[in-house]
Image 1 (tube, rainbow, N blue to C red):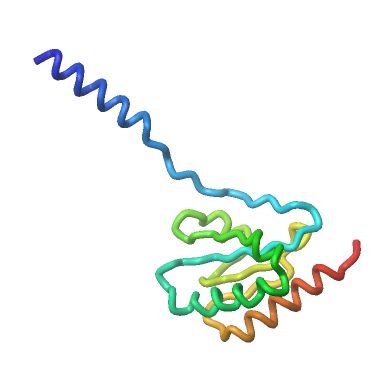
Image 2 (image 1 turned 30 degrees about the vertical axis):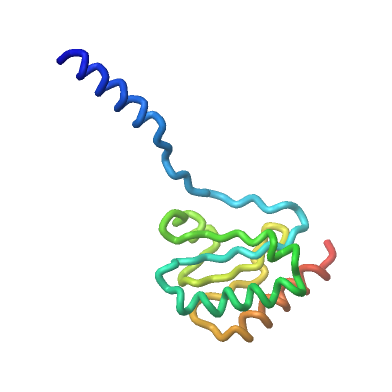
Length: 130
């Protein structure tokens, strides 16, 4: 009986000690002079997000580096980042350059509006000199 209890507690200890807490990002660090896209998703609103996904695919042709460095933030785990970037609605797509928000698009939008706005922001950020 004691042997079974010892085995049970030992196994429980190993199982529980192998569990890891799901860590969330509390701050995003951007490289200097980079243009980065940050996409805030709720995943419960895939209908509105599909136009953002299509826009991101279109943007990849003109801005492959920026799209390759896309940061995706999931709403259920990243409330601090939502506050940091002042995100009020999902989906939301933000262009960050030199740690500053250049443009932000939120909510249900047509694909063309998303693409045009992001292209303008990426071009502006790419042409600015400091």
